[in-house]
Image (cartoon, protein in one colour):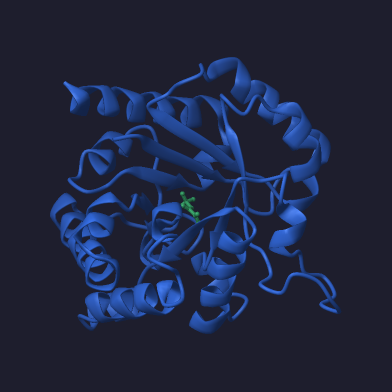
Length: 260
Ligand code: PEP
């Protein structure tokens, strides 16, 4: 199965820097069929990069979108405005949920807005450190999946990606640690079985599930080898060209090994 490596540049790089960085990436990223490489720059860099990048090498994603298609929503960017600029959009990233107070309802509407506008939503789910300690991981994930995908049609679920990104693993949220392989395996099962419950066995098996949280070139192989994990969402290390390129290479190696 194809792997997905998504780089989340967050609120870094101005337009000029983003363009230089994309050039650097393109020099080290061969065109691959087995890995879908996506970078998510800030909104302002999306338009110039949409003209610059070779989409066979990397696709573009937005870091968020608003769910209304137009109107008096100062400061927001609608999914309609991303059409033609991005192919993917992150929805419900933990920083959106926890810093900007996004609720499950906003996230559900954003998933729908993305689909309505031909974008692939990457629904991010994950528990906090406290929820984990209290043994609530499964409940939290199930709620986030049900709520985020509630209004997705059975003919649309094949256009959705899910990323498991527990808050306690994200490199910018204090002192991160990463899940053990068996923990990740368990979580993937929870996510897939919820999708199965909602959309059937085929969908539960096929939906791409990614892992995000302190992924780097040294641990990528471990995460990408976990059964049921189809890719990675990479934050800090997506801003270091050789690291990001190495992660894409590792994903490609694993995709090839799985094909054998
Ligand atoms: C992220 O926040 O999307 C992320 C994965 O960050 P990092 O890789 O820096 O932990």
